[in-house]
Amino acid sequence: MPLPRLLLLALSLIPVLAAPGPPFVQPNAALLGFQGAALVVQRREGYELLPEVVWLDARSGEVRRSVRLEGAARGGYPPTLSPDGAVLALQHGSGVSLWRLADGQPWPFPPDPAGSPAIHSVAFDAAGHHMAVGRSPGYAQLWDLHTGRRLRSFVGHAAPVSALGLAGGRLLSAARDGTVRVWDTATGAALATERVSGNSNGRAVGAAVLTPDGGTYAALTTDGEVWLGRVGKRGLTRLDVDNGRDLALNAAGDLLAVSGHSERGLAVVDLRTGQIRARLPNGSAFGRGQRVAWAPWGDLLAEQIGNGQGATSSDVQVRPLALPAKLVGTGGRP
Image (cartoon, rainbow, N blue to C red):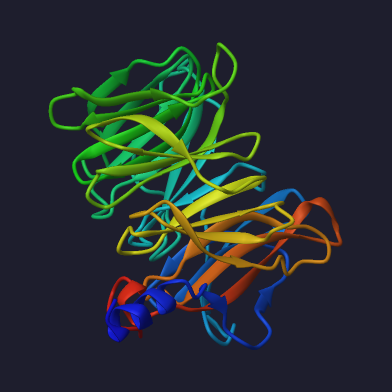
């Protein structure tokens, strides 16, 4: 083998490592995600989310701006930020409430009729045009955000739809019975149907992500396993991670971050090969990763972690990564 090829092989075996320096930590916050160069969090007191969203400089932690969610009540409902950072969704029982983050005003979206089935998951598309919701007893709906019109329902699960992804003209839905499906949003056709390995009923799926092209997906079970699937290829592949709690894709959709309670730390997975590229040590003395988000330019991860104020309280920390330029995913940073 020529020397250049040997050198390239050796370099490919070097793991991605955390960059030096302490992480930035925002106390008493819930992680929403990134908007450009800003980290977006929602303030909290213990279990309760406060009706205030804050934008922080992702590298320094300096507050850039904040907005109060008008008409929002304190509560513990899981928040979902649209990829463009324009809309925040808070699900509550059988409904979902939306806010424009430009001014904190409610988004004009029609309420669900009384007695509607419970909502268990919410997802937005990257363009901010559509929203998907996962419901009991086992179906998903696609809505037009601007008209408030329901576009299509996707029926095919035997348990509540607990995780969603929306990308590339496709919808990923995963349920508490362990079933995972990918749908064509234009026709409603099922493009992939799988079940995570386990008992006869499958394992419940707690989180899922779909790559921007809609071709690859990952499902995280509630017992912490991660399974990788590809549309057009039968079967799921289990990744070498354990005790996972949340998943996040980089902007290019070729790297997957898995945070959780693993003693081996946060894992970074190359989705092209299914191999682990890095393990970052857990950095919290009180708890480990609960939610995770990847900065658009690829060299920062934000992780929601437990703190010393009780099991339901949390902080948000930013973790730097040293990634090869070809894996950053967007070719530039702010």
